[in-house]
Length: 213
Image (cartoon, rainbow, N blue to C red; front, side, top):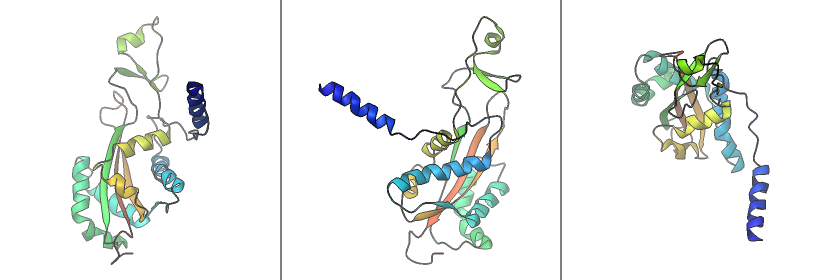
């Protein structure tokens, strides 16, 4: 009887899970603005459940992050983040941002998850499938497309891969209400490999009591 009750509770809980109705992320045509908003929406989901203030994109912070992302575009992502952290105060005031507290970070992930298996882009079909070129050319083998992320699920994946990971506790802080970010689509070795998405970001808010915007 207890086992049946446990199964019933699990089914009931699953039925109340919110369905992911966000668009499918096409690795060949990524909507940067939609992905950016999806990251903010995922952060705010948890905040709304806990009745915390929501976080929103701050245009001044966006401009600051964009400055460093553009100036050091050819440098690795972690070095762009290092430059952003080191010189933030020198540049932020030029864009009208005067908060004395901020945290910077980055995240990076392939726009498709291969699970270590071989895959090939079938250009005529506009999709990646598991296998090698030889296997794909064999008509007897049924093609298996690689599963696609939704914008929401990919946003969650990027947040899980955030570095430094301790920023997650600051993102959960109710006083952190501003975020600025720059998303770059890295197409190195494309189309052999799906594009890599790189996110450089800054969060801020009234965490300290003085000298705040």
